[in-house]
Length: 231
Image 1 (cartoon, rainbow, N blue to C red):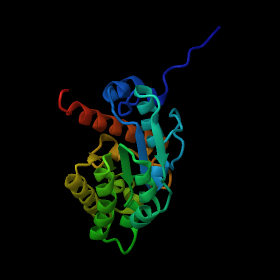
Image 2: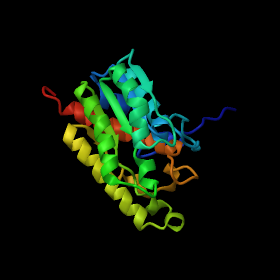
Image 3: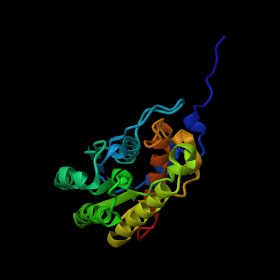
C-alpha cells in the first residue's frame, strides 16, 4: 500500500506564488546582475516554518531570475545588526563595483529601533545608497516595514513604535520617489496581522515571511516589467 503526501503549507499559502506564477511575472526579465545590501533581512536571517522551504527571500528571487534567465550573477552583502550608515560605509562600494542591473537596499530598521532614531538621518543614508545604484543603471527596490505592533501588541505595546514605523516607511517612499526606485509595500500587506510570518524574536521574518516577501517582490517586479514600453 502506498500513500501520497498532500501539498505543503507553502504550496497552499494564498500569499506565496508558485514557481510557475513567479516565472510568468518575470518572463522577459532583462536583469543579469543582482545585488543586495543591508542588514539581517538582506542576509536572510529567520526561523524555519513547518511546510516551507528554508530559503530566504533574496535567494528565492535569485532562483526565479535564474529560471527565466540562466547565468544571472548574484552578490549579497547583507549582515545582521547593522544600521544604515554602516551598510553604506561597508557595503555600497563593493555593490557598485559589482555593477548590478538589479539591486535591493534593505536597512534602516535597526536605526528605527534605536533610542536616538533620526528619520532625517536615515533618509539621507538611504538616499546615499539608492541614488548611486540608480545612477549606475540598476533598477532598485526597497521595502516598507509591516506594523509588528499589530502582531505582538501585548509584548510591544504599539503607540510609539507604530508611529516610528510609519515615519520610517514615509522616508523609504520619499527616497524611492526621488530616484525612481520600486517600493515593495509590506505595511498594508494582508499578512501584516499574522504571527507566522515572524520569528519568535518578533523582529525577523520566519521562512514563511521570507516566502511572502519574495512573492511580493515578484509581483512588484512583474508590474514594473509589464509597464515597460512595448508591453
